[in-house]
Length: 259
Length: 348
Image (spheres, rainbow over the protein chains, first blue to last red):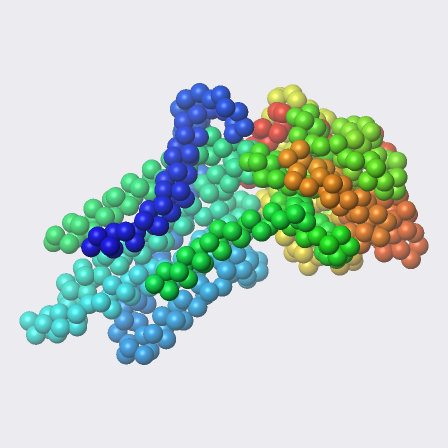
């Protein structure tokens, strides 16, 4: 056990340098008020206040959450039946189907989104709907793979036992398969919701410059206005919302397990 | 054991990779995308026996933020008002006039600009203005020429327009339409320009994009675009239905220049590169590839002469000497406020 512990040192170092330190810097930027070249700075909460007081920014936040939530729900609705279908196939076909699912992920997301831009050009959809389509397409494989893994792990004897005890297909699904695949659903939701809510590339490519999401606002602060303090504050607000959402889903997961 | 060794070696290689890039004969160049002929870079590498590290940015603000973080570049190409700012902030090295002798070839109008009267710090790279590029089969030319920027308030164009997604340029258009200077530092005029843009957004719901509009116009995706003259020249060479018009309310003259940042690692090679790019042959290659206007007097004369590459191409040669056209200056109010205001316009 001890020797295994040692093997985690490189990872700890990685976390320290590339995750913890930047997080601390974001925090520091968010609660101070001068640019990045000067050494004098003051602690302030103005950056947060500026975000919360501006109705336009709140609207951007709500749009981001709405699109991400919708993407997650639709991915779940499409992804769950697909995963269930794949998991019920014979082993060799399963491997093939999963390969098919992951195939698009071999291609860079930028290219795929660019292709969608061309396809959607010919349709008279609203910009927001185009962004939504792009997101569902890009993030769906994450959902399917997570749920498939959970269902494939299921002991088939449990279903046989359920049938022996008189449960029909619907009942055995509701009482056995669904509850036992909840961990897969939870990680699927996490893997879809997180990139969807912070995406800035998809709205920029597909949104015709009309769909501004929180990711675009953060990008603007760092790339165009150079206002790192404000950008960091928005990132922190976002992180807070995401952590709360994850905490809530975990909690849901646990109460489902207890049932 | 051996596995450990291999992974250790791999990690060392990974860590050291960036260090190789810092080796002696390397030149770090920072430019806009689609803004050079790659051949020029290869030739320079061959001729001087060095490696050119060529990286891209999409606007002056992004370039400035990158410099701010302490990244070292040897040659940077950026726009007039940003050079104005960098000179004032003393972040630019003077050019070595012993090396940069090809400055002589630059046309007089492009030399001695307001921010650098003796070209002590900067050498012009390419120039352009912002124009309206439109499909003559969809919009009557007489109407465009009569209304200028105001045509973008016409609800008939709803869903058929591109606007270049760059805060300074979009606000320039609004200031000009309202008859103000695009270098104003008056917050009331800025507010008026913002209201004008909101009105435009609600009237025509344009697509705010950048380089996508070049192919978009060439393929007839939209009827009208507010775009850079070089892009308009390219698009109109591809699609003969397109016409180019510089509104009489005035527009900007944008001059992109090369400079050497004060933290450059290889200033001598940087001077050589700048001189190389200014040369007739290379200047010619760059202007032909990008369709943007060359500051090299002889090149400009040759490409626009009968039989030249851009003979009769509308939009290649920007309007010069018109009193309502201006060059961007660094204005703190506009620099700070316009990016966020533009986002607010877009989401209306």
